Length: 583
Image (cartoon, rainbow, N blue to C red):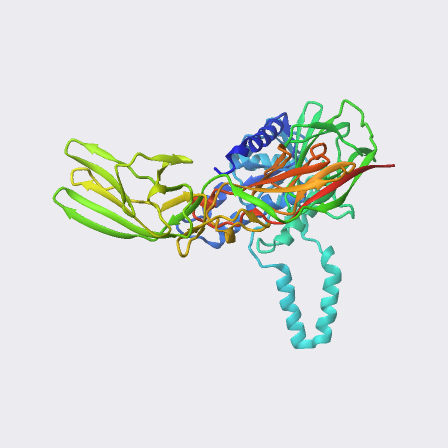
């Protein structure tokens, strides 16, 4: 794994989340039924009928829409529902309680149906998800407008279009089928699975009208919904744990309102640091927090309801770009580059003792590297009383009989140093598998042989050349590294006459796929995902400074010979950050 050396950071992040998100009990008011029995009843093996596709799509739509509405939920099986108890209009399973159930109308029977009846009798809310595919509602309307245009003219169609555009946002996509004296409600969503927008509006309206108040609300600074901000809520005694994550590639400023109030801290799952939340305020009985989320950024808020809200002044941070680092980098790679030899001739010679299978290929060297390895995947020797299977490797005029292999990354990736046999110009490689007639089925090459070394390569002409030692930002592929998986190190030297005031940030515009920032020999941060930046306050000095950007990419380039875009893909900037208290 190219990024194995950074795996600890990822593992620590997952470990912290796993620890926090298993504490206490999950807080969710909505249960979504997984209609497995209904699906089995309609599905025919080997066929995909309209009915089972609708059942599957309806469930998938609800499961994906609810987090966008900032409505947390649990998925229930019919078996779990059949063993539940009902308490005052809530389905209770263990410590979990649900006041809203989303389930198809024909998905339940037996004990599960009895639980549903008691749930409705005592005041619960049942929402019926889409039960037909239908078609996108707007497509239907547009077709009707076209008919109006044909029969009544374009002026009438234009007036109709203007009315629809005015009324469209306010249209209702759910319908109240039943309201009981105990407060029970049954809603239907007025949209098919082919209209995800209509389904989302239907679920949102039905849940809002059910009276199940949201325990979390998230809005933008302008007051608009923020569907890319998702959350998970757990409760441990008097402590409430909220995990928030930005699922988009854009920076987002979120205004968060929590119904649970108390002293609140922010716990960083990436670093493990904890700190009080600046700007937390108690307003109309809710705890309000404003937070900026980096692309794919996440955090945990911990609210202690036994302690009062400790209002702290909000700190507004502003950044100023000091300068852009020159885009002229010294460059080298830590791991060897790879050139798969995926075009071979095969010659089979059969003789009295068995068969010889000889693979032949060629490549060219415009400059012979200091070290060149031949890597073979999944080769073996066999020995037996009456025969065996041997391997002979020939490179130009040099032969190795039963060579002693090293290995690279995995012991199955066997390597042979062939540097002394290589010369400038055209080179030939032959791999002969000598298989005895008494040794069972022959074990032949199952994957292309690969050349490994510090070189650039052209896979079309199968030519290796010198790797440039000075580059600008951009993809590694044009540099001759299409199948390289590992770390490329960018180095630049800058001279500072003074150290800027404030918190200093180094930030890269774009990286594929992870980056480590090193300043004057000190590692400032490893970033496995955005934002591609690090706090370097205290690491710069007056005079000469050495900045290294270590970019590590995916193993897919090497393992699958897939030329995925990799490298430092944009400019690197030095920023100064200053905080200002907001009254």
